[in-house]
Each structure stands twice: as C-alpha cells, then as structure tokens.
Image: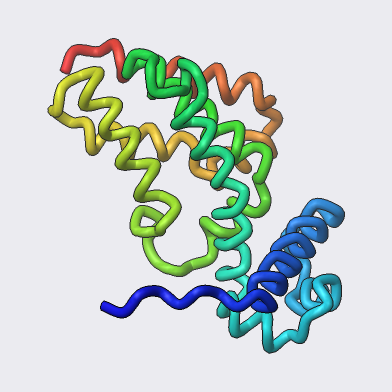
Amino acid sequence: MPPARKERADAARNREAVLAAADRLFAERGDCEVSMDDIAAAAGVGKGTLFRRFGDRVGLIKALVARRSEALRADISTNPPPPGPDGTADERALALLDTLLRFKLDNRLLMLTLENAGSGSPYLSETYGPWHAQLTGLLTEARGERDADFLAHALLAAVRSDLIEHLTATGRSPADIRSGLTALARAVLTSSP
C-alpha cells in the first residue's frame, strides 16, 4: 500500500479556515441552518472547495464534531482519575458517560443534526464505534464479559442527542439529566452480572 500523501499547505489552510468559519457561524447563529454558501464566504474559499473537501453539509458537520471531540478524547484518556486511565472501571465508565453527556449538551444542535442526518444506522458511524468500544471495555472490566456489549449500547442510548433535545425541550435541566444518567449508570454497574 503506498504511503498516504501529505496534505498540501494551501489545502490544510483551507480546511482550517472552513472549520473555523463553520464553528464560528454555528455558534453565532445558535442553529445548524448555516448554509454552505455562508461558510464558504466566511472562510474565503469557493463553494467547490468546500464540497470537494467535505462532500456535503453532513460531511462538514462530521469534520467539525470530530475536531471538537479530539480534545474530549484526549481528556478522557490522559487526565487523572476519573476519567483518566488510573481510576476504577466503574469510575471511568461514569466519567465517560458524564463527559459524553456534557459534550452533547454543549454541542446539542450540531450533534442532533449529525445524528438525524439519515446517513444510515447511528450505531455504524465513525463517532459511535470508538465510544461503544471504550465503554464496553470498561463494563467488561467492571462486571465481567457478560452483557457488556449490550449494556454499553443501552447506556450510550441515554446520551443520544434526540433524547437530550426532548428532555431539555420539556423542561429538564442539564443537572437533572446528569443526575438521571448517573443513577442509570450506577444501577447497571452495581447490579449482579
């Protein structure tokens, strides 16, 4: 297999300009109704560049979410316990779920747009798989192997953006949602395998 080609400097600059412009516009407008034309103009690139680089609006939102979640992944894997690598499996699982919930609350509209994009099963997306694998590993460590895969799916369903949107729209505060998620996770982690 040939080595991956290094990204050209101008292409890297354009990618960064587009992601920064999209991030700023989504934050300023407070919704995901920002058009590709708006983003291209704010980034100072042609609309064709945007489509060649990201494919479509969903591809751009995926790249933006991936960028925002890079720091999240680093925090989870390197910070002191919890959620860092030295806490108990129970502590790390609770911290992982709480961190994902806070991320979804902070990025509600982007995550909702991404999860509702209709690009197939959310369980097959490149963003879901790593979180599921990590949580499955923690549940296996905490409870033994039995049911860890299913329980990881069930716990991650509690932080789906459509559920978070429904709960916030019906008056639940972030603190209430966090409390409920913690109670659910503790019930799963303390039940007999």
